[in-house]
Image 1 (cartoon, helix red, strand yellow):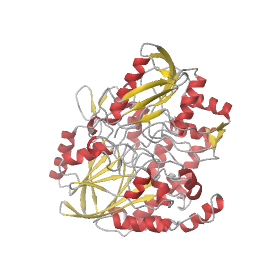
Image 2 (cartoon, helix red, strand yellow):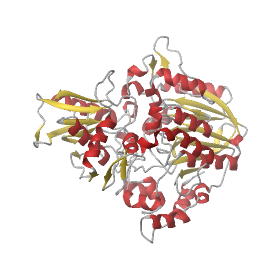
Image 3 (cartoon, helix red, strand yellow):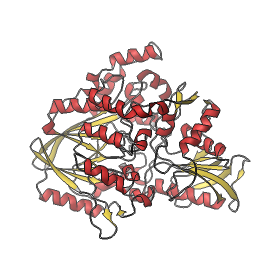
Image 4 (tube, one colour):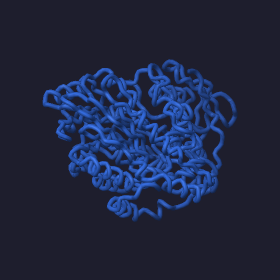
Length: 565
C-alpha cells in the first residue's frame, strides 16, 4: 500500500545516471542514453482502477525548462509540512540523491547545471506517449485520465487562438473529465463555446449563476472502471473572481462550498459509487483541510499551487496527489478497490524527460500545425541570459527582475508591480531569450501595462493585503499564488505575522530612503483586474527592454528580506 519503497527504488536507479563526462551536448547525450523511456514508465500494477492525473499545463505544448521553488513557506498548522519544504530539505525528506535526474526535476538545487545535463521536460507529445503506454498496459477499461485545469491559457499560441490549439491537443489525449481556473479568463462566452465541443465533461460543482443560484456546470460524473463505480466531482478554483477579473465572468459565483462537496459525496455514495474522486483546483492546503473535514472522499487530485510531490499525502483515509506544472510530470495512481473501500494503492510521479521519451506522432503533428503560423514570432531572439532566469517561488525571482526592470525603464516609473503568478517557464545560463520565453511568462487576456500614481500608504496596503491572501494561517482564506513582485522598492516581510503587520521597512531603492506614506509615487504594473485598463501589453514592454539590453545578468535578490518563522 505504501509507495515510498518503490519511489526510492526508482530514484536510486535514476541517481546512477551521472554526467561524469561533463556538461554540454556530450554529457546530455550520455545521460539520456541511460535514462530510458522504459525506466520512466516502469511500474508494478496493482488493483482494479488506475487514475492518471495532469494539471497546471498552462498551454505549454512543447518541452520547457521549469525551475521548482527555492522557497515555499507554509504557515499555521502546515508550517514545515510538504509541500512547504524546498531545495536540499525537500530532497532529504524524500531521500533523493543530489545531482540525480529526480533532484533536477523536483528541486531548484543546481538547476542551471543539471538542466544542461538532463535537458528540457514536458511536451504534450511526450505526455501523450506516457498516457498511451499506461492505457495499453492497464487496459482503457481500468483507466481514468483527469485534468484538474489551468490547461487552456498562458502561452502565445493559446492567446492567439483563444485556446483552440491546446483544446485540440488535449482532445487527442482523451481526458475523461476536467475542471478549471485560468480557463475562465477567456471570458464566460468563450468558455461555454469550447465546453459545448468537448468530447468529455467539464465538471465544477462550486460555480453558480448569480441570479437563481443554479449550477452552471455539471457537478459530477459517474464512470465504471475495472468493475468499480467511480464518482468524479469537479471543484473549480474557488476564488477566480477575486484573483482574476470579475468582469470576464460577471454572472458566475464561485466559492469553496464545503457543505456542497459533502452533499455531492453523499449523493454519489447513495448512487452506488465505490470510489469517490475530487478533481480539484483548490490548491494543496485547501484540499488538505477539506480532506480532514469532508467524509467519504477517497482521492483528491489537487492542482493550482503547482506542487510536485513524489509520494501521496494521506489525510485520514483520503489520498492527495499533486502533479506539478507545465507538463513536467504525469501521475499514475493504481487503486485496489474492494466493496466501497480502497484496500491498497501504488503511486508514481512520472517525470517527463523530453529527450528520453519518444514523441507521439499524432500529437507532434497537431502541435506543429498549431504552432506553424506563429513560429517566426515565437523564435525571435530578444537577448541572451548569463544566468538562470526563473519566477516560481514565494518572493522575487530573477525573471521577475527582468519584468520589473522593463516596466521601470519603458514606462518611466518609480515603482513597478508584477503579479506573483506561478506559471512562466525558466531559462538557463547562455540561453537566448526569445519572444516565446517572454510570452510564456505573460500571455494572458488582461496584460496591459498601466501607469498611475499611488501614495506610499496605498503601496503598503496593497502589499499587506496580498501577503494576507498568501500567508493567512487558515487555508480556506488563502488565494494561492506568490507575493507580488516589486521594482524600485524593497521591503521586509514576516509571513508568520498578523494581518496588516507583516510588511515593514518599505524602501525607495533609488534613494535608499523610506517610502513616505503621504507622497505620490509613479507606479506602473500589469495584470490589473480592472476593466478597460490602458497601456501597452506587457510582452511589448519587456521585448523592447530586452532588445535594447541584449544581455541579462541576474543580480542578487536582496530587495525583499524575509524574517520570522
